[in-house]
Image (cartoon, rainbow, N blue to C red; front, top):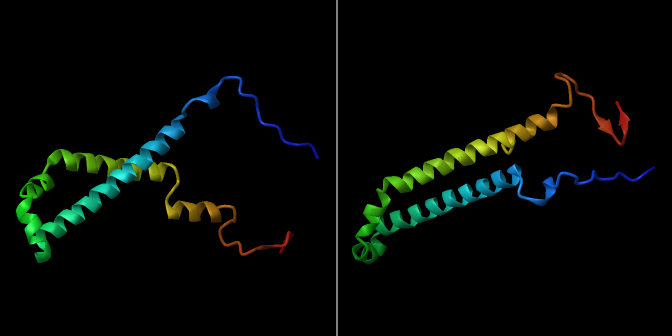
Length: 119
C-alpha cells in the first residue's frame, strides 16, 4: 500500500490566517464576552441585592448606572447573535451532530455492523 501524500502548497494559502481561523477566533472571543458579561452581571446583582454586601453597594453608586448602559447591551446582543449564528453554521449544535451521525443509515434501517461483518 502506498503512503498518502499531501498536496503541494503552490498558492501559499496555508501560510496566512484563513477565513475559518478568523471565524473560529471571533467565535471564541464572542463567547468570552458573553461569559464575562454574565459573570460581572451576577456579581453586580449580588452586590446590589444581598444584604451582606450593602457596604460595597453604598461605596459604588455607579453600579446601577453601569448596568443600564445601552452600548454594553449592544455589544452583548451582537456577541450572542454572532456566537449563535456561527455555531449553527459550523454545525456545532448537539442536534446537528446527532443528525450527521445517524444520516448514513436509511430511515427504518436497523442493520448494524459488528466487527466488520454486516448483518
